[in-house]
Length: 485
Image (cartoon, rainbow, N blue to C red; front, top):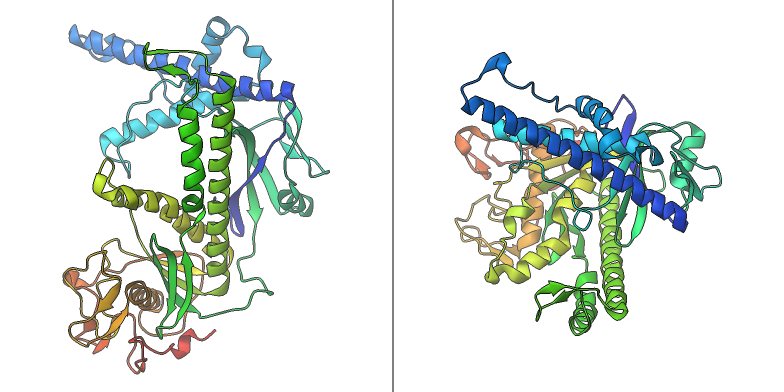
C-alpha cells in the first residue's frame, strides 16, 4: 500500500511473517490485549459522558451547565487514559506505552469516522458508532510509532519496543537493502495475529524513481483492461489486438473439495457448541486439529491468490504507458442472501476485483504508467468498438457482442477492453497531441448533456480516436503516431 509523500518519495508497507519464541508470543498477545483494553475503557468513558450530557439536557440544562465533553482526539483520549490507567489497568507497566496509545488512536479515528458520517461529510458506506472489542471476535493488533523499531542487519530479525528482537519467518532483504542505501525510513510498525500466526508490517517512506525497469520489454503503449470473474483480465490495444487474457485465480475452486471434506469431518467431531444442550463446551483435540487444517488450507488459497494478483498487475504496469480500466463496485455487485447469485458472489469474492484495481493503482505510479479509470456508468461492454452504437440491454449471459447496426461480432470482454483503451487515450491526450505519461490517475470526462460514448457528430470520429485513424479488422483503430513507444 502506498501514498504520495514528499517529492520523489512514497509511503510503502513491508509485511513479514514472524517466528516468535513462546515468551515473545505471549508478549505480543499482551500488547495487543493492552491496546484492546485501552480502547474499551475509553469507549466506556465516552459513552458515559454522552449519556450524562443527554440526561442533563433532558432536565433542561444547556451550555456551560452541562458536564464538559471529552476530547475525542487521540491526544485527548490518551491523556484521559493516563489519568485512569492506575485504577483500570494496574499492570500497565508490563507493556509498552505505545500499546495504550494505539488503542486510544484507534478509538479516536473510529469516533471521527462516526461523527463525519453522521454529518454527511464522509464518503463511502455509513460508519456506525464504535463497539467494544472482544478477544474472541476482533483481530489482535497493535501499532508502534516510537522506540526501537528497526530491521536487524542479519535480515532475519526485527526489533520491537519492549518485546525485543524477534525472528522472522522470511528474509527482510527487500527493506534492509533500502535501509542500507538510505532510500527508506521506517515510521511505524504494526503487529497483527491472523491466519494462525503473527505478522509485522513496517510503514516506511521510500524513495522511488518512477520508470519502467530496463530489463522489462515494452509492449503496446495504450491498452484497455476489462475485469471479470471468469477471465480476471482481458487486455486489448487500440487496434483491437488481444494481448493478455488471464483466468480468475483457480486456487479456491481446486481446494473446495478438500475444504468441504474437512468441514464435514469437523461437524462430526466434538466441537465447542453442544446443540443438544444448547451450551458451549470444551472442544476435543481432534476438532482443534481439523480446524488447524482448514485454516492452513484457506491460508494457502489466500497466498496463492495474492501472488496471482501481484504478478498480473506488475506485468501490466511495467509494460504499458497508459492503461484504461473500469470503475467497479464489487460490494454492490454481490447481493448478500440471494440464492440466485450464490455462485456469482463466490466468484466475485475469489476474483478480488477491488484488490486488483488497488494494486494496479499504486504500481502505475511506481513504473511511470498512467492509469485512467472510466466512470462507473461508462458503457464499455454495451458500446460497439466499430461504429460506436450503444445497446440498451446486454445480459451477463451473452458472452459475444453482436452489433445490430454494423454487424460486428466480437468477444464481449475484448470489445469492452478496446473501448476502455480508446477512452484512456482520449482522456490522456484530449484526442490529439503526443502521449503524456505519468503516475497520476485520470477520471472520466463527462460529455455535454450526458451523451454516451460513440460517434461524435461535431468531429465525425469516435470518442477516444482522432481524425485520420484507419479502421482495423477487429473494429478498432490503428495506434496513433503520437502514442508510439
